[in-house]
Structure formats: structure tokens, C-alpha cells
Image 1 (cartoon, one colour):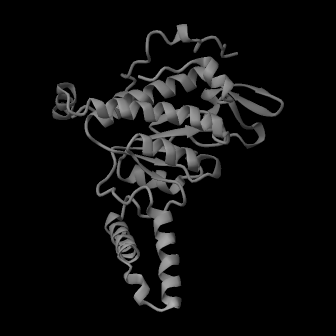
Image 2 (cartoon, helix red, strand yellow):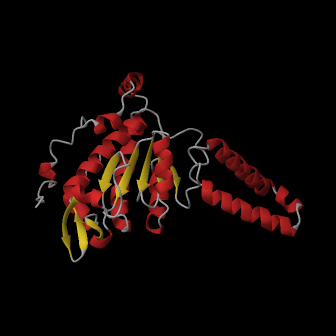
Image 3 (cartoon, one colour):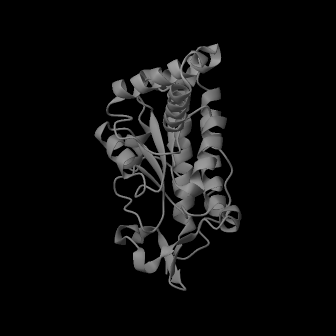
Length: 269
């Protein structure tokens, strides 16, 4: 499991929440205090969220399932593309198209169209069309590629979804809930955490904060992928282990050395 320290989170500004005037009351358990009209996130809860999410994602990857990262905010897009690619995972960074999960047949048709357009370019056949048609086909190819860049190889439902800002990605969240796909989300103090299975309370507007959290999740997926062929992974698949269910029942443990890492140095008062 990736190493995470309180100092690292503080230096990345993970603890800075949204303006207190815009807060969602359901985030109260994750808030430490308020300073200068800004809510300060309790990093004890952030560390718990990261550890639990990393353990779950590692088990998902070890079982051979893929993870889908979603982050269409300007601050998150490049980070999501980079980290998801590094972890050999799917990603959406431009715009979530309704039905990406609930209507995958239509999505696959658009990906097939993208393949056809790219084949036209690679083979040089596109030069047989008029200039106007070439311009139209080129624009179509760019648009479809932008929308399906990170999910063109996704031919089945992912084992889990990682979101940046569930309020921004509410359509993706709704589709995941409908299909009962576990959701891990970076949740700021202005969002509702209730629909999320694994809440990571953190600043979702800072690139450094997003990079710090998402890189840990990607590291866990990479570690889990290395175990995909191990006996432990085979046994886990056979037993139908569900880390999401364990989390909801409160059965998933936080590492015993959490307090030694500085997670409990912040009081709740």
C-alpha cells in the first residue's frame, strides 16, 4: 500500500475546503474547523479515506477488473489522464456523455466509428474525398476521439469508478449507482458525500492536492495488478470478496500505525 503522511497532505493543501457559505451540511463529520471563511478538512478522515480506497482498489485490480477515472474539471483533467494511463486504467477527462455505462452498446458504436475514421486517415483513403468532406470527417474524428479517448477499449462495466468532485460528475455518479458500481470520490466540503462508497475528503480545486491523492490511488492499482495472477487473487475471485460491502459494514480496518503517521494529531474540537 502506498505510503501517505500528514505532512505530505498539508504541503499539498489537501486540507483546504470550500467557502463555509457554500458548504454541504452532510460534510460536517469531515470538517475540522473554519478559518477565514474557509472550512478546514480533518486530515484524519482524509487519511482514512485514502487507506480504505487504496486497499479496495488494490483488491479490484488483483481480481483482474479495471478501474475508470473521471475528472472533467480543468484542474483535474491532465492529472487524471496521466495517472489513469500509468495505472493502465480507463478515464474520461473531457465530458461525461450520458449512457457511457448504462448504454454501452451505443458507446461501442461511436468507438467503432472512431476506428473507421482513423483507418481512413492511416490508409490515406481520406484523400479520395472532397476538401469539404475531408474537413468534416477530420472534425468528427477529433470530436469523437476527445469524448472516447480514455474509454475506447472499455468493453464491459468497470470494477470501480474514481471521481473528482461528485457534484461536478453527478451524471457519472448516478449511472454508477444504478449499476451498483463502487465509487471512490475526492469530495470537497461543498458536495454531498452520501452517494459515495469511499469518501476521500479533500480539496478538489488544487492541482497539487488532486495529484497527491490520485497518484496514491493509481499506485494501489498498479500494486494490485501485479498480484492479478497470484493464488491470493484467484482465491479472492472464487470467494467473491467484496471490499465495498466490508466498508459499508465497518469491517475494513484502517492500518494500525495510522496514529503514528500523524493522522490523529488534530483534535475534533
